[in-house]
Amino acid sequence: MNKKKIKIEGTGVYFPKAITSEIIELKYGLPKGWSEKYSGVQSRHHVTHESIGFMGARAAEDALKASSVKLDDIDMLISAGGTYDYPLPNQSSLIKHHLTNGCDHDFPVIDIDCTCLSFVSGLDLASRMLDGETYKKILLVSSEIASKGLNPSNWETLTLFGDGAAAAVLSYDPTGTSSIIKAKHVNYSEGVFHSIIEGGGSVNYYDDKPFNKEFHSFKMDGKKLLRLAKTKLNLFVNSFFSNLDYTIEDIHIIIPHQASRIGMEMFNKMQPSIGAKVITTLAENGNCIAASIPMSLHYAIQHEKLKRGQTCFLIGTAAGFSIGALLFEY
Image (cartoon, rainbow, N blue to C red):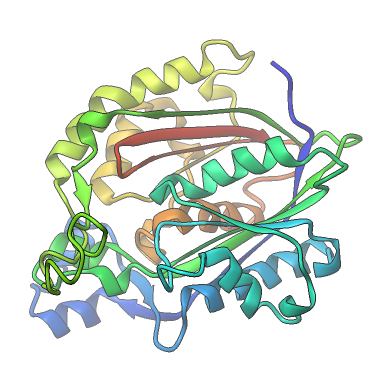
């Protein structure tokens, strides 16, 4: 398999105000300790004044600083996320607008929305575009606000999700050892409606279906999702490594999507030999949709759990129902 000589130059994050589970439980009348017991989340972050574009720009600037890359050197910005500030314009143009001196640059911007797998899909796409000619450096940003789409009467989602942003500077680096080894994405349409926000799109437009908290909030059938993931995930992992010189046990660090406490436990039980290698940030940040994986990647790099020359496996599920993964050498 041909490795793509792509280097993650630097990563960055932005977090709004931290909200403890105790605060949420007091505000909405939940039993004390319910959130940590059932969602696995002790604390998460919720926006006060921030927009998705603002948070994404701050995370992007943090990544630029970490990589010593200037905005002048960026050839494209990709917004990889499942939430947006406005239906129009596209989210990547808003992130660019919020960058310091962003309006002084005219590099192209595109959006990728694979919900929770958007960063993984964006990294895969960017690696295929980075050729050292048209594109030498790409800024990949996942910025998400989940807190505004939650129904307080649904305790499971209310306590699970958080807000925040993460970004990475990617470069074409033919002389280095860093590389994208393999990426794989599949979709199982039988789970397409297991996670959904029914209102707001063209099928249930606001003129036809006036705003209703239940109808226009995120909801998921957790049991059906877990059942489908349990059926498909191990098959996917086995297929991913079937034509590689690596096994999952060979990988240095594994970063799954921070879906839920039950989801993380299920993944660890399915792959019991890798438990010590799995990065978990769910308790501190909650599920931040597409930003969860790059937030966890940033954490792993900052705490030197992932070092240059080591391998990292990103894997997750997404609404739709999709499974995706990417293996790279950092």
